[in-house]
Amino acid sequence: MPRRKPPPNPFRWFDSSPEVIRLVVMLYVKYPLSLRNVEDLLHERGIDICHETVRLWWTRFGPMFANEIRKKRVEAMRQHTHWRWHLDEVYVRINGEMRYLWRAVDHEGEVLESFVTKERDKAAALKFIKKAMKRHGRPKAIVTDGLRSYGAALKEIGGTERQEVGRWANNRAENSHQPFRRRERAMLRFRRMKTLQTFASVHGTVHNHFSQERHLVSRTTYKDRRSAALAEWRQVVG
Image (cartoon, rainbow, N blue to C red; front, side):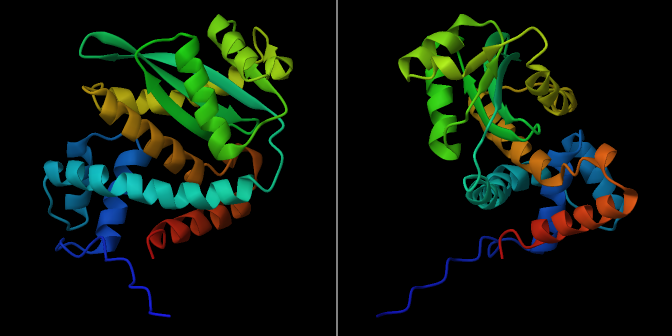
């Protein structure tokens, strides 16, 4: 059989090293920094790039890095039963118009799926739930707020008995919005739905990758997990 050609190097057209590009993408996505904040931080390290270069790199390589990490996480997570999901949606204003960012998280607060829509109706909820289930499988329980769109969507796919609604039961999903809100303020809001969808997906994956539950583990354990996460990030594209 003929040998399969290796995939082309994604960094082949760039003068900067892959290590610098990975660092730029990680700083911009993981921390609530603006493009110019990242430019200033890199200048202190002797790396002279423009803030527009930061924008180009995260737009081009951010989804690629996130997809590689997401594939590994999904493969590992699908080997276990998902016993509880939390679904919620938040308002995001784009050019003066209201849009909705739907988010699904598991019982540990890991972001499973992010989805942006113009409406907050049954069709939007159904599309969001189907997308999450197609990638991660079906959970045993789904916790939502009182929005009727969730109940109508779950009824159509035969998941009404899985739904749980409670006043404080969905705090896990509510808290998952906080890191994204901090990034939204640093970015001075979004201007297009496509940009919002791309960044929400990338941000959720990167946040999961570096979320080490520092408040639940010892300092030694946290340092070991952090080092492992950084090493995997550096090797994410081979």
